[in-house]
Amino acid sequence: QVQLVESGGGLVQAGGSLRLSCAASGRIFSINTMAWYRQAPGKQRELVATIISGGNPIYADSVKGRFTFARDFAKNTGYLQMNSLKSEDTGVYYCHALVQVTPGATFNFWGQGTQVTVSS
Image (cartoon, rainbow, N blue to C red; front, side, top):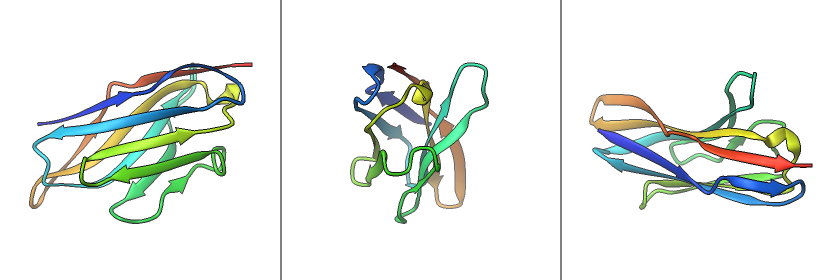
């Protein structure tokens, strides 16, 4: 199967930065889409940023200009650089990937989540 492991979360003051990583491993033929979602307490999970195949990143309006999402295709890893963090960025950040495990067989996978807390 496929595992997604996130890292890089933590506690940071407003205005600070964090860099999240998502490393995919296991039976991977290709990763079609990789994305970051977040879920704040009492709220629904929302899309933060996504990269579809080799396209440009797509960002939620709330993070445009502050977050940068990049993929290292050779390492099956995604990086979310988060700058100018705000208290409303607080939540659990989840990595998601749409993975082709064999040609024609594509599945969704989620990481376990990493907590990001921004103090004001």
